[in-house]
Image (cartoon, rainbow, N blue to C red; front, side, top):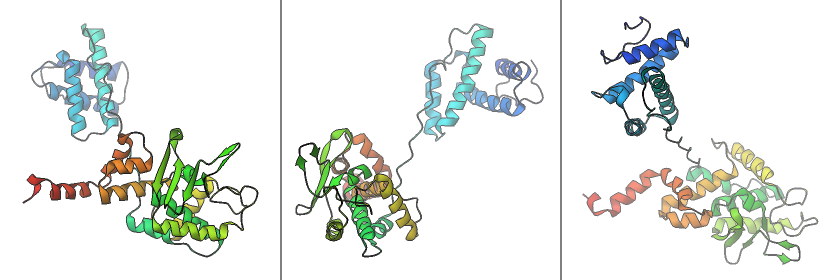
Length: 316
């Protein structure tokens, strides 16, 4: 069968199956020339992978190895999924028209899309963000205490707003979290009602004490919440989000800063300095080390430096 002039030529001159399938796409399915070109490129790649072996004889194991090779070469999941779709359609046509017993691509999926790394602030920007108070009024004092605590201890914003001034055990009320200034630690209840205790740094303790010096004037009905809004009620997570975003913008920090970014910054900066993944896992309250390992990707240079300093075969 002659190759239509508008179709790309395939590399294997003796294999008319690809030409026939592409002609079906053109004449029967009436796909656009651009789409057919895409199919042709995908099928040519599969044919090149097959080499001397007939393309109709490839097995599911062959397809998996080809998919793994594409992934190892850095091809993204979406492109691999598109190639698998092209190949799957071709083998379905072979099953219908040429009595192929099975489709080797059926059931094979592209690798999962990699999750984007959490965004963290640089150490200089993080320190500048949390250390700048901006005034002696109640709101700037509360802001600095909250931001320092988020960065100092890696708290979730839900854990921050749930903090009380001290541990409370009353009928019908029990603290979800509280800060112990004397011990320099914060007690929180994280996801899955999992309690944990996290150290609090000296600057954060100083900022909280500075806020507590004026907090009493804002207290209304509920005396327990550590952080209050201007109305004297427990501050909401949404208000913390708005305040930290506005604060970052006022300092010209080039990032869309949100409370969880300070948690990411805490994790990555502690890991960069200590290399202790288990300790970071405990402080973040992750139930699995896998959830914490994402931060190892944020600073491979640090890990490479540790390797160079510690591994006997890395030394010159």
